[in-house]
Length: 169
Image: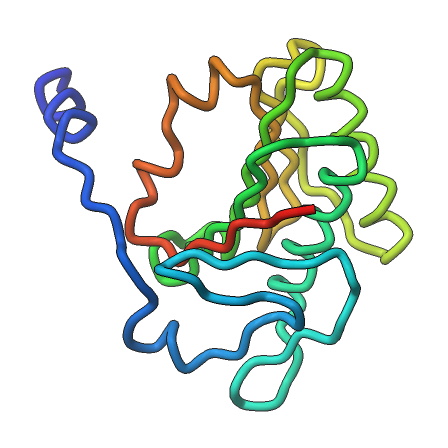
């Protein structure tokens, strides 16, 4: 079992250079621009719609989480669309913080923002440690990581096939 796990973790990671296929035809949030496989977003709220014309609540929630993290000075905010790559979430939001106190502040800000919108939190892990706080909202999972934890676990590398949206302040 260890050999299988080690082989899986040690496999080369392939970076995605652009949006292709079905992901290219989906709508994107207002203020988001694709640039060489990445996107950036401004802080203005907007309606988020998919190509079919119906709103994508998960995508909207992911960018609301990103904005809440940016409000508390989270850095390197990245939204990964993992829909079709995993069965338990549509989006991951990755944020980097400098301290345990900032991790708690970001997690609290995310919780308050989504609570005002009526979103129900499925679970929270790691709130006391501050190295990696995981906030699960069902279709969106927010990861608030210290710099060391983010580089050690390399979630961007593990989800290399996911469409990426870099979120800037």
